[in-house]
Image 1 (cartoon, rainbow, N blue to C red):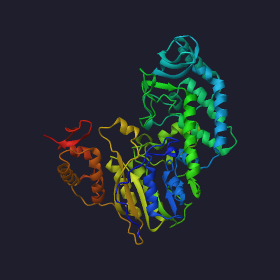
Image 2 (cartoon, rainbow, N blue to C red):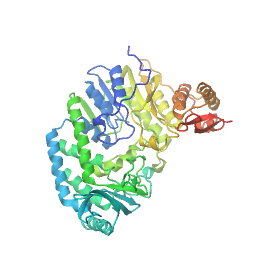
Image 3 (cartoon, rainbow, N blue to C red):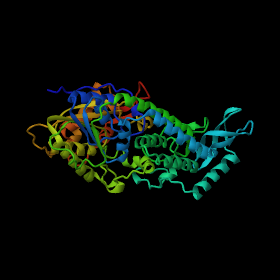
Image 4 (tube, helix red, strand yellow):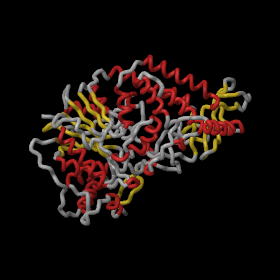
Length: 529
């Protein structure tokens, strides 16, 4: 009999091959590794119907399991395929430098600036912009070294030249309209997230890479290119004092802060090449077993998989409205020229009339398919994280209606803090729940519980108990770690009027939210005085 995993597994930092390209909600690889090892043996078949960046498939390959990865987002398949594929490092290096040198020779004039000490032409390393106007530059002079200065007439004239060059030359760059759900700071089209000189250089590099005939080398260079573009966009906040970027892309929207930075693309391209080379050296050594299949399709209908043929499912379903995977991925997909099926995305997005009903209906279809393909008495694990109880209810109802039986819930720490958590330290969760289900031999499909009970009082009673145990102070993390499994096991998502429970609204009637008296950096709930 398979042993249940009951406790949090300490999360390990991501190794280089998981840092080659950005993706959202990436889970700790070592945790997934342990779940696969616990629930399967060598040669078993693993399925991930919401593959994301491919961690389940990659860890399955390391453990010599056959794996099937499915995702409707083409960016997912692009990242997973590039991570799994063995490449010739020497060919990769040679191709990179050929592309790099060709484009540097053509476009280095776009990064010229004047040294304020000796007035010689220097290399621009970084610039700070206020809205659409360049304000400061950082340069590197071969005689005087690095310098910073306010943008002068030469710098501003160069921007004008770049705009004119872009308008009269046939530069291929994306002009896709940004989805409303992820649109911010009045940026309507993808190209508005870049300066004119960035579009010139990026368009040229992208076009040159796509001409490479060797498929593996072309794709890994496109990974280099794609992983670089957030760093050279307008989405990086700028530090006016140091003339550097303050941080990375930290907001889960497509936006441009008022004060932003513009980085030297040739420097960024080189840095990404080094990181991806390191990652590919790792995967060339770690992944020798290549019995996997990747499919860019919806998991609502997976006729490619036979009934009762899967030994284990580990997945990470769409988080409702929390992460707009397709909307954010369009930043990359548009440059890569990948076709995206936005219509069939599983998400709560009112801008596209994707409401709870659509989210719920699509999830039900997926979990019915997962129940069909999983072998009897085998397990499915999935991670989930959302503050919206209606989303939780939709997910759990879909799973139970499909016939799965819940065995246990584990609160699992994350490998790294997300950008959003970094910005919103006061009121955020820093973990995920892993739900472990079994497909029983004799299954009775379960309907959602309809009995009218006073859910608010149940929840408040539980919170009172937790508050007493925690010396009258509960952090959001500790609260949700305890309260979500309680709500799920009791099936108390709605109130007596069948309206979704708002946990924080219940809490605010009796408790106050704010900093701890012991440590002001910790925020949580305490009893009203």
